[in-house]
Amino acid sequence: MSITKTNRRQNIRYRIRKKISGTAQKPRLAVFRSNAEIYVQLIDDTNGTTLASASSLDKAIASQSVPKTEKSKLVGAALAAKATALGITTCVFDRSGYLYHGRVKSVGDGAREGGLQF
Image (tube, rainbow, N blue to C red; front, side):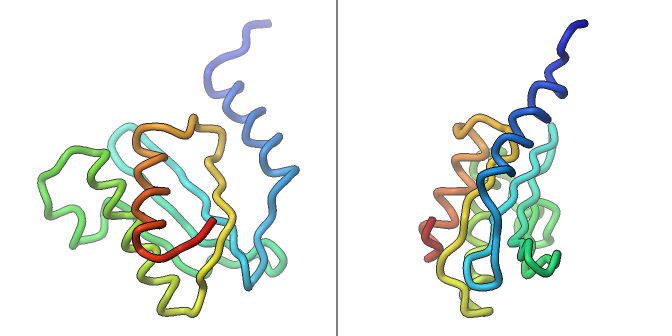
């Protein structure tokens, strides 16, 4: 049986999710990266709710013509702004099986610059 790239990422994702979980005080910052866009959410796993979300499809971010890594940084900063408005300062970063480089790293950098700690 051949293991595809998506199956491999799914297994890595399950391995990560076994170890980390978000609470209302310290939510999980989950990243989803498609070929064209990037989406992030702050998730409270104890209640199963999304506290805040941002994506590269938001009007303020989509209107800018910058490379995808720069858009990812803007998405991280937008999520950090929403989190600080809710009174959230810390979170747990969930890279969802993606390597921590490129657009995923840019989201983390943008969120850190916006004031989130993880």
